[in-house]
Image 1 (cartoon, rainbow, N blue to C red):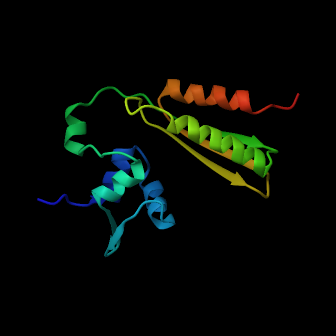
Image 2: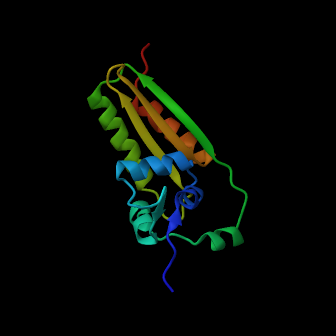
Image 3: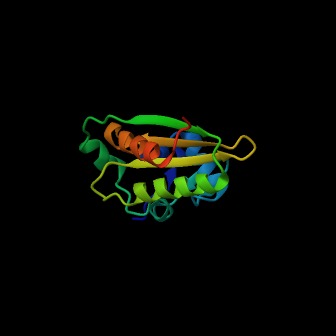
Amino acid sequence: MPQQPYSVEQVANLLGLHVKTVRNYVRDGRLKAVRIGKQYRIAREDLEAFMGGPVEPPAAETARRRRHVEASSIVQIDAISPGEMTSLGNTLMAAAASRTPADRPLRIETVYDEERASMKIIVVGGVTDTAEVFRLVTTLVKEPT
């Protein structure tokens, strides 16, 4: 029997993201989806391609629930050039991508406001992992003295 496509809400729950974030991914073309009426549906294969690995069914996730502590943080860096922003963003993304499948999920997004020369780093993950990202940012970004 073919797998039913996921709703935006189901994908948001699976990935630990806000529904609006998933909708933005679909609208930006980062996550492939089909529009049915006023709703999007995401095929399992498309979600797996987006995640870079297999999707665990929600029922299996509920059956093995454990305590989960997560931090959501935004780091703002002002007076940063586009080149510095690109270098820092690439380093952070590489650090997040180098994690093993056994590690807990760590999501890092970057936003750059060229007009203000300001970078925001959005980090969502375990408290320890988030602290490691902060240490990496502190090491890579030299604060003015």
